[in-house]
Amino acid sequence: MPEKIKPQLLSFLAPSDAPLTILVVESLTYLPDLRTMFPHAELFAVAADGDAFHRPEYAALGVQFTALDYLAAPLPFAHETFDYIISDLTLEPAGNPQDIAAGFSQFLKQTGALLTSFRNIRHWSVLAELMDGHYYHVVARLYAVQEFEKLLYASYYKDVRVRPQRRPAPAGELDRLVAAGFDNLNDDLETEFWLVYAARSMPELSLLKSFFTAAERKELARLLHRIEYDVDTAQQVAAFWQFYHRVGLFPDYTAAFVKEAVFHPAQFYRRLSAHSDAAEQAMVQEIVQAAHDAARSDEEATKLSALAEELFGKEAEP
Image 1 (cartoon, rainbow, N blue to C red):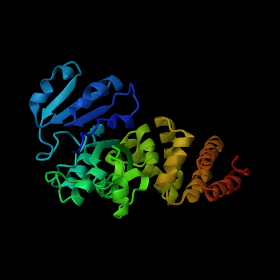
Image 2 (cartoon, rainbow, N blue to C red):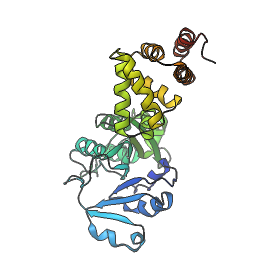
Image 3 (cartoon, one colour):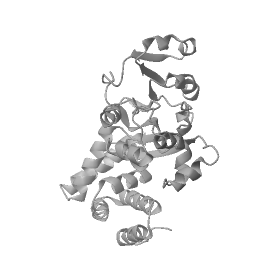
Image 4 (spheres, rainbow, N blue to C red):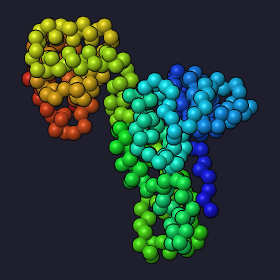
Protein backbone atom coordinates (compact mmCIF):
# COMPACT_ATOMS: atom_id res chain seq x y z
CA MET A 1 0.00 0.00 0.00
CA PRO A 2 1.23 3.56 -0.65
CA GLU A 3 2.67 5.53 2.22
CA LYS A 4 1.75 9.06 3.20
CA ILE A 5 4.18 11.75 2.16
CA LYS A 6 6.52 12.98 4.88
CA PRO A 7 6.15 16.78 5.26
CA GLN A 8 9.64 17.82 4.19
CA LEU A 9 9.08 20.81 1.88
CA LEU A 10 10.62 23.20 4.40
CA SER A 11 13.97 21.56 3.71
CA PHE A 12 14.20 23.91 0.72
CA LEU A 13 14.15 26.97 3.02
CA ALA A 14 16.55 28.50 5.54
CA PRO A 15 15.28 30.22 8.71
CA SER A 16 15.14 34.00 8.48
CA ASP A 17 14.00 37.08 10.40
CA ALA A 18 12.82 38.65 7.13
CA PRO A 19 9.18 39.84 7.04
CA LEU A 20 8.11 37.28 4.45
CA THR A 21 4.55 36.58 3.36
CA ILE A 22 3.80 32.85 3.17
CA LEU A 23 0.67 30.94 2.16
CA VAL A 24 0.00 27.31 3.12
CA VAL A 25 -2.64 25.52 1.06
CA GLU A 26 -4.20 22.49 2.81
CA SER A 27 -0.87 21.32 4.32
CA LEU A 28 -1.53 22.92 7.71
CA THR A 29 0.96 20.72 9.56
CA TYR A 30 3.73 23.00 8.26
CA LEU A 31 2.42 26.01 10.20
CA PRO A 32 4.16 25.48 13.60
CA ASP A 33 7.56 24.91 11.96
CA LEU A 34 7.03 27.90 9.65
CA ARG A 35 6.39 30.17 12.63
CA THR A 36 9.58 28.90 14.28
CA MET A 37 11.66 29.36 11.11
CA PHE A 38 10.17 32.74 10.19
CA PRO A 39 9.13 34.55 13.39
CA HIS A 40 8.37 37.84 11.60
CA ALA A 41 6.53 36.37 8.61
CA GLU A 42 2.89 36.94 7.79
CA LEU A 43 1.36 33.48 7.61
CA PHE A 44 -1.80 32.68 5.66
CA ALA A 45 -3.56 29.33 5.30
CA VAL A 46 -6.30 28.05 3.02
CA ALA A 47 -8.14 24.76 3.48
CA ALA A 48 -11.52 23.36 2.49
CA ASP A 49 -12.15 22.09 6.04
CA GLY A 50 -12.48 25.22 8.15
CA ASP A 51 -12.81 23.14 11.34
CA ALA A 52 -9.13 22.23 11.02
CA PHE A 53 -8.19 25.84 11.80
CA HIS A 54 -9.37 25.44 15.41
CA ARG A 55 -6.77 22.88 16.43
CA PRO A 56 -4.84 23.96 19.56
CA GLU A 57 -1.44 23.78 17.86
CA TYR A 58 -2.43 26.62 15.51
CA ALA A 59 -3.99 28.93 18.10
CA ALA A 60 -0.98 31.12 18.95
CA LEU A 61 0.72 31.21 15.54
CA GLY A 62 -0.90 34.39 14.23
CA VAL A 63 -2.14 32.71 11.04
CA GLN A 64 -4.81 34.32 8.86
CA PHE A 65 -7.12 31.43 7.89
CA THR A 66 -9.52 31.19 4.94
CA ALA A 67 -11.93 28.30 4.41
CA LEU A 68 -11.84 27.62 0.67
CA ASP A 69 -11.44 24.72 -1.75
CA TYR A 70 -8.55 25.78 -3.99
CA LEU A 71 -9.63 23.27 -6.64
CA ALA A 72 -13.04 24.90 -7.01
CA ALA A 73 -12.47 28.61 -6.31
CA PRO A 74 -9.66 31.12 -6.97
CA LEU A 75 -7.48 32.21 -4.08
CA PRO A 76 -8.85 35.41 -2.49
CA PHE A 77 -5.60 37.38 -2.54
CA ALA A 78 -4.02 40.14 -4.61
CA HIS A 79 -1.58 39.07 -7.31
CA GLU A 80 2.13 39.00 -6.36
CA THR A 81 1.37 38.78 -2.64
CA PHE A 82 3.45 35.82 -1.45
CA ASP A 83 7.12 34.96 -1.13
CA TYR A 84 6.21 31.27 -0.86
CA ILE A 85 3.17 29.09 -1.42
CA ILE A 86 3.55 25.72 0.30
CA SER A 87 1.33 22.72 -0.41
CA ASP A 88 2.07 19.01 -0.64
CA LEU A 89 0.54 17.02 -3.52
CA THR A 90 -1.20 20.16 -4.81
CA LEU A 91 -1.76 18.98 -8.36
CA GLU A 92 -2.47 15.31 -7.66
CA PRO A 93 -6.26 15.77 -7.21
CA ALA A 94 -6.60 18.56 -9.80
CA GLY A 95 -8.66 17.95 -12.91
CA ASN A 96 -6.96 20.97 -14.49
CA PRO A 97 -3.41 20.86 -13.08
CA GLN A 98 -1.90 23.46 -15.40
CA ASP A 99 -4.65 25.95 -14.55
CA ILE A 100 -3.98 25.44 -10.83
CA ALA A 101 -0.20 25.69 -11.20
CA ALA A 102 -0.38 28.77 -13.41
CA GLY A 103 -3.01 30.31 -11.15
CA PHE A 104 -0.79 29.89 -8.08
CA SER A 105 2.13 31.55 -9.92
CA GLN A 106 0.10 34.76 -10.23
CA PHE A 107 -0.07 35.07 -6.45
CA LEU A 108 3.71 34.77 -6.07
CA LYS A 109 5.99 37.77 -6.04
CA GLN A 110 8.46 37.98 -8.91
CA THR A 111 11.03 36.57 -6.47
CA GLY A 112 8.63 33.97 -5.03
CA ALA A 113 8.40 30.19 -5.29
CA LEU A 114 5.89 27.35 -5.06
CA LEU A 115 6.92 24.45 -2.82
CA THR A 116 4.98 21.32 -3.65
CA SER A 117 5.35 17.58 -4.24
CA PHE A 118 3.91 14.72 -6.25
CA ARG A 119 3.71 10.95 -6.13
CA ASN A 120 6.06 9.30 -8.62
CA ILE A 121 4.18 7.10 -11.09
CA ARG A 122 7.43 5.20 -11.67
CA HIS A 123 7.81 4.13 -8.02
CA TRP A 124 8.14 0.35 -7.71
CA SER A 125 4.87 0.09 -5.74
CA VAL A 126 2.81 1.74 -8.50
CA LEU A 127 4.48 -0.27 -11.26
CA ALA A 128 4.04 -3.51 -9.33
CA GLU A 129 0.31 -2.79 -8.97
CA LEU A 130 -0.01 -2.06 -12.69
CA MET A 131 1.88 -5.21 -13.62
CA ASP A 132 -0.51 -7.16 -11.39
CA GLY A 133 -3.51 -5.56 -13.12
CA HIS A 134 -4.45 -3.00 -10.46
CA TYR A 135 -4.48 0.80 -10.17
CA TYR A 136 -5.54 2.33 -6.88
CA HIS A 137 -5.14 6.04 -7.69
CA VAL A 138 -8.31 6.65 -9.69
CA VAL A 139 -9.00 10.05 -8.04
CA ALA A 140 -5.44 11.29 -8.43
CA ARG A 141 -3.08 12.27 -11.22
CA LEU A 142 0.35 10.70 -10.96
CA TYR A 143 3.40 12.04 -12.74
CA ALA A 144 6.92 11.12 -13.76
CA VAL A 145 9.46 13.79 -12.91
CA GLN A 146 10.03 14.94 -16.49
CA GLU A 147 6.30 15.47 -17.10
CA PHE A 148 5.88 17.38 -13.84
CA GLU A 149 8.80 19.67 -14.67
CA LYS A 150 7.33 20.35 -18.15
CA LEU A 151 3.96 21.14 -16.56
CA LEU A 152 5.53 23.73 -14.26
CA TYR A 153 7.63 25.35 -16.99
CA ALA A 154 4.46 25.62 -19.08
CA SER A 155 2.78 27.29 -16.08
CA TYR A 156 5.22 30.26 -15.99
CA TYR A 157 7.78 28.94 -13.52
CA LYS A 158 11.38 29.58 -14.61
CA ASP A 159 13.49 27.50 -12.23
CA VAL A 160 12.37 24.03 -11.05
CA ARG A 161 14.37 21.90 -8.60
CA VAL A 162 13.42 18.48 -7.26
CA ARG A 163 14.51 16.26 -4.37
CA PRO A 164 13.61 12.58 -3.89
CA GLN A 165 11.71 11.08 -0.99
CA ARG A 166 12.50 7.38 -1.21
CA ARG A 167 10.90 4.11 -0.08
CA PRO A 168 13.12 1.11 -0.88
CA ALA A 169 11.75 -1.87 -2.77
CA PRO A 170 11.49 -5.36 -1.28
CA ALA A 171 14.27 -7.75 -2.18
CA GLY A 172 14.10 -8.81 -5.81
CA GLU A 173 11.47 -6.23 -6.86
CA LEU A 174 13.89 -3.89 -8.63
CA ASP A 175 15.45 -6.78 -10.52
CA ARG A 176 11.96 -7.80 -11.71
CA LEU A 177 11.18 -4.28 -12.94
CA VAL A 178 14.54 -3.74 -14.63
CA ALA A 179 14.20 -7.12 -16.35
CA ALA A 180 10.77 -5.97 -17.59
CA GLY A 181 12.39 -2.94 -19.23
CA PHE A 182 12.02 -0.17 -16.64
CA ASP A 183 15.08 2.08 -16.34
CA ASN A 184 16.19 3.03 -12.84
CA LEU A 185 18.09 6.25 -13.53
CA ASN A 186 18.93 8.12 -10.30
CA ASP A 187 17.06 5.50 -8.25
CA ASP A 188 13.78 6.69 -9.78
CA LEU A 189 12.10 3.33 -9.12
CA GLU A 190 12.61 3.77 -5.37
CA THR A 191 11.54 7.45 -5.28
CA GLU A 192 7.96 7.39 -4.00
CA PHE A 193 7.55 11.19 -3.91
CA TRP A 194 9.38 14.09 -5.49
CA LEU A 195 9.68 17.33 -3.51
CA VAL A 196 9.59 20.40 -5.75
CA TYR A 197 10.79 24.01 -5.53
CA ALA A 198 9.44 26.05 -8.46
CA ALA A 199 10.52 29.70 -8.66
CA ARG A 200 8.89 32.40 -10.77
CA SER A 201 12.29 33.76 -11.83
CA MET A 202 15.73 32.36 -12.59
CA PRO A 203 18.09 32.79 -9.60
CA GLU A 204 20.01 35.65 -11.22
CA LEU A 205 16.84 37.56 -12.10
CA SER A 206 15.36 36.84 -8.70
CA LEU A 207 18.37 38.46 -7.06
CA LEU A 208 18.09 41.50 -9.33
CA LYS A 209 14.41 41.87 -8.50
CA SER A 210 14.97 41.60 -4.76
CA PHE A 211 17.01 44.81 -4.35
CA PHE A 212 14.78 47.52 -5.78
CA THR A 213 11.08 48.09 -6.42
CA ALA A 214 9.37 47.15 -9.68
CA ALA A 215 8.95 50.86 -10.49
CA GLU A 216 12.67 51.50 -9.93
CA ARG A 217 13.66 48.54 -12.10
CA LYS A 218 11.31 49.73 -14.84
CA GLU A 219 12.81 53.22 -14.76
CA LEU A 220 16.33 51.82 -14.84
CA ALA A 221 15.54 49.60 -17.83
CA ARG A 222 14.05 52.58 -19.69
CA LEU A 223 17.18 54.69 -19.09
CA LEU A 224 19.51 51.89 -20.17
CA HIS A 225 17.61 51.26 -23.40
CA ARG A 226 17.50 54.94 -24.33
CA ILE A 227 21.26 55.21 -23.83
CA GLU A 228 21.85 51.96 -25.71
CA TYR A 229 19.91 53.17 -28.75
CA ASP A 230 21.27 56.75 -28.67
CA VAL A 231 17.97 58.48 -27.84
CA ASP A 232 18.74 61.96 -26.45
CA THR A 233 21.85 60.33 -25.01
CA ALA A 234 23.46 63.20 -23.10
CA GLN A 235 20.25 63.95 -21.21
CA GLN A 236 19.57 60.25 -20.55
CA VAL A 237 23.09 59.72 -19.19
CA ALA A 238 22.63 62.66 -16.83
CA ALA A 239 19.30 61.17 -15.74
CA PHE A 240 20.95 57.78 -15.28
CA TRP A 241 23.56 59.18 -12.87
CA GLN A 242 20.91 61.08 -10.94
CA PHE A 243 18.93 57.85 -10.65
CA TYR A 244 22.09 55.88 -9.75
CA HIS A 245 22.77 58.09 -6.71
CA ARG A 246 19.12 58.60 -5.75
CA VAL A 247 18.23 54.93 -5.35
CA GLY A 248 21.69 53.73 -4.26
CA LEU A 249 22.77 51.63 -7.22
CA PHE A 250 26.16 49.94 -7.02
CA PRO A 251 28.54 48.47 -9.64
CA ASP A 252 27.78 44.75 -9.19
CA TYR A 253 24.02 45.26 -9.42
CA THR A 254 24.27 47.68 -12.34
CA ALA A 255 26.55 45.31 -14.29
CA ALA A 256 24.17 42.39 -13.71
CA PHE A 257 21.15 44.46 -14.72
CA VAL A 258 22.89 45.68 -17.89
CA LYS A 259 23.69 42.07 -18.78
CA GLU A 260 20.07 40.99 -18.40
CA ALA A 261 18.35 44.07 -19.91
CA VAL A 262 20.65 45.42 -22.61
CA PHE A 263 21.02 43.77 -26.02
CA HIS A 264 24.27 45.55 -26.98
CA PRO A 265 26.23 46.10 -23.73
CA ALA A 266 29.44 47.34 -25.41
CA GLN A 267 27.43 49.96 -27.29
CA PHE A 268 25.72 50.99 -24.05
CA TYR A 269 29.01 51.33 -22.14
CA ARG A 270 30.60 53.37 -24.94
CA ARG A 271 27.75 55.88 -24.93
CA LEU A 272 27.55 56.00 -21.15
CA SER A 273 31.28 56.70 -20.89
CA ALA A 274 31.30 59.27 -23.71
CA HIS A 275 28.70 61.45 -21.98
CA SER A 276 30.00 61.09 -18.41
CA ASP A 277 32.40 63.38 -16.57
CA ALA A 278 35.68 62.18 -15.08
CA ALA A 279 34.17 61.04 -11.77
CA GLU A 280 31.32 59.26 -13.56
CA GLN A 281 33.75 57.59 -15.97
CA ALA A 282 35.54 56.14 -12.94
CA MET A 283 32.22 54.60 -11.91
CA VAL A 284 31.67 53.28 -15.45
CA GLN A 285 35.05 51.60 -15.14
CA GLU A 286 33.98 50.01 -11.85
CA ILE A 287 30.77 48.73 -13.47
CA VAL A 288 32.67 47.23 -16.43
CA GLN A 289 35.12 45.61 -13.99
CA ALA A 290 32.18 44.13 -12.08
CA ALA A 291 30.77 42.78 -15.36
CA HIS A 292 34.16 41.24 -16.13
CA ASP A 293 34.37 39.66 -12.67
CA ALA A 294 30.93 38.06 -13.17
CA ALA A 295 31.61 36.81 -16.72
CA ARG A 296 30.54 33.21 -17.29
CA SER A 297 32.90 32.41 -20.13
CA ASP A 298 36.42 33.24 -21.26
CA GLU A 299 34.96 34.83 -24.39
CA GLU A 300 32.76 37.19 -22.38
CA ALA A 301 35.65 38.11 -20.08
CA THR A 302 37.94 38.78 -23.05
CA LYS A 303 35.39 41.10 -24.69
CA LEU A 304 34.91 43.07 -21.49
CA SER A 305 38.64 43.34 -20.92
CA ALA A 306 39.10 44.68 -24.45
CA LEU A 307 36.25 47.14 -23.89
CA ALA A 308 37.87 48.39 -20.68
CA GLU A 309 41.13 48.99 -22.53
CA GLU A 310 39.28 50.83 -25.32
CA LEU A 311 37.38 53.10 -22.94
CA PHE A 312 39.86 53.61 -20.11
CA GLY A 313 43.26 52.66 -21.56
CA LYS A 314 43.52 49.76 -19.16
CA GLU A 315 42.26 46.18 -19.40
CA ALA A 316 39.92 44.86 -16.73
CA GLU A 317 41.81 43.23 -13.89
CA PRO A 318 41.81 39.42 -13.86
